[in-house]
Length: 193
Image 1 (cartoon, rainbow, N blue to C red):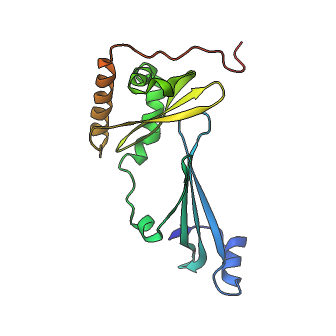
Image 2: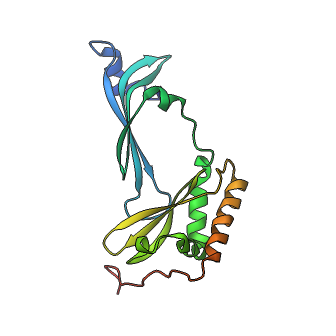
Image 3: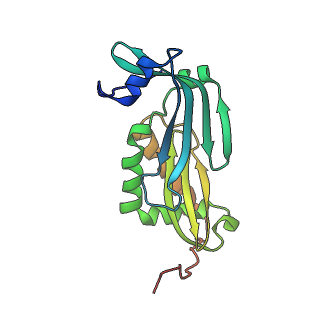
């Protein structure tokens, strides 16, 4: 369930208290926004459909349907599976880690492109870190008119920051072993002067 702390004079709280059948329905939407400025910053959306009820002076939302939409498509997630899911151990540090990588280590990001299939880099004008979780790092490859994402899996899951640092260093070592760096094509983007 999701607990909503709303003011006592909230129209939503009044609707829940006065609902003819006792529990009004609703949909909550959550957006996963990339912390690094990239095209199409919303990485995923989560919709919870369910019922509102007043519980201990708060408004409780009980989901009956969960839908996760990613760029690859939407999937219905079992409510019990959703409730039992554990958060990624790096979730709270992800924004800080990605912005640090983008702001202070662009050279490392460019080196990691050596691990990317050359076809995925065709026409690329910029590569930015998009996401990181315990299983890998995702890069956003931006072209003049479109973009794509490339996943670089870790050799083993990372459950803490120290392990993540080691996993990224392994990826960088693998990239360093690639004989010929794949430089991004330098093309004028719309608006460049």
